[in-house]
Image 1 (cartoon, rainbow, N blue to C red):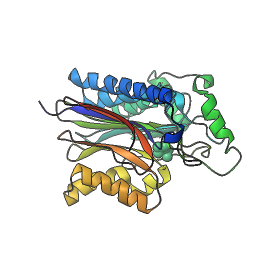
Image 2: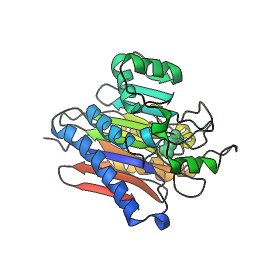
Image 3: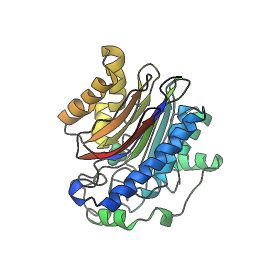
Length: 307
Ligand code: ASP
């Protein structure tokens, strides 16, 4: 049996260590554990890595602590516009949705796009109509209301500034994601986000862009990114890791470090990624104070927030 397993993230750029309390830390770690178990149990039952990453991301989307699904941040119009994607490494199939509103689990709609559409990326109202056609669950606006997110938005509302969730003042990072290797040796990746607080209406980040915030290829790796989306898109970060492995022969760790600690950092981007290769190796580099992250395989479970 191969070294099947899963890694997840709940966003780079965490609550500053100086502001973290033991209660909050426990709440984050419990939520990461629940998502990890949701994904790992799917793998243990011999289901696919695609189903495992969806299960893990759904669990994170249902938790208000993370900037995706229920916890999605407010855009400049006071709405929650969400982006998500999912990709299968064995055949390079992918599905993604951008700027959708009121969807309980955006990652499940991305999965439906992968399964039932000849397109890869559906946007806004068109994606919402597709969701209704496929019986995807919707929620009312108040399901997504969160006082903490609302207060974050009030600080920048009316300005041209858009900020990532949490972290240093005006440098908040969020998003959730999962990468997995199943018992058949297939990789998959999924990413879901509310984007950035006070982002322009219609702004789309890296998370639903295949190759930027999400990528999976059995020949190389599965990647889910988090951080400043404009920089991750310009660096084509997820695909960059895969290319560094495929064309340059780098290991998963060297390729991931190069993409985040060097290339993203050199152009001024903040963020990190989770990565897994076809041998089950996992790495989770980031260039900011913390990244909510966890991984589990047959040998160990890791749940961490700071460096
Ligand atoms: N990458 C996401 C975006 O730019 C945000 C994040 O990861 O915090 O939409």
